Length: 406
Ligand SMILES: Cc1ncc(COP(=O)(O)O)c(C=O)c1O
View 1 (cartoon, rainbow, N blue to C red):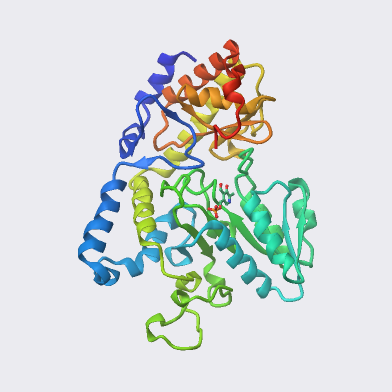
View 2: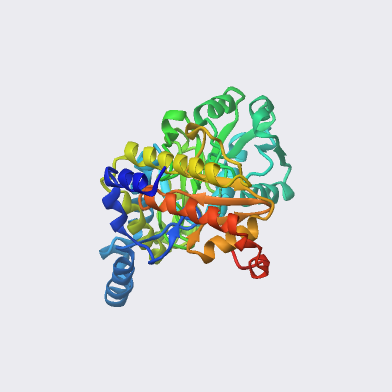
């Protein structure tokens, strides 16, 4: 494809105007929104309002007057349609790691007599580490089975199957409905990590019959660094599952200050401590970037951007090997290519304004966020990548120093 042809695709892109909802630095092609979403243009004013007006002037009154107390549920209601959930099945709280802990513990408690958390090797580290931490202190085993053998490995010892829907390295995507149905056939609960899915690919938790899910707020949801995470519990489980972190904000009546814990009937039971209001304000502004955006067009554009990148890179960079599924229907919205010297190649690329990331030991990873990535961005990124490789620019010793790229 020529650059003019890529630009012609932008000219007919129904989402081209949505890029204006973001503030992107000049001279940068940002292909890392799968790790940290770009800054929404509305966020600085929204955060300033929360700080200056709601906190500065409203002071403690803002818990009620500015709706702070309802923020975990209100912000969750904006996430729910992106993950195929009802508003009353989602809450925003804590980090993804903490939410994994809460839901794994609740799932184990709900399946007495079963002691296995089933997952795959190479799942995102925090998912594995949280499960391992639980196993270290209890009669629980973490069983990690390669993804093509997961379904046959779900037996009556498995309490919960914990998988990341879109793999953080390869972008390979599980068939949510099929794996969930297999877990249920064996009597296990299904917990999905949607960190690389929410806002990037169609997700239908309710339609798939999923039980539990978690996900990050700072990736495709554009909530900013360290944004609070979300947590989903299917409505049919709400009254049955409780958080092991029985903090006062999950209490049925926190402001009666009673001595004994009793869980709230709603998703608020999954809160632990006081909600992070500044982070919630930024996340709310991040989720608002999806307002009025046609979901089908959004996800189709994500696939088209990634398809274009694969085609251009494969045509021009023979030293790279595709490490993501070629079939767009089987992957999320990022693409990885393998190269023995991926680290210095990515460092050289970032130096030229194309920001992707490196995943050890050998992956160049590029995220395509259809809200703000253009076809021209993709074409130019492939062009600059080809130049970095052809010129040997990446061989410069300064690109080999670790720590230059996160
Ligand atoms: C699949 C997945 N789960 C969890 C996390 C991070 O969890 P936390 O926000 O608790 O650091 C990431 C971060 O990249 C991730 O990719």
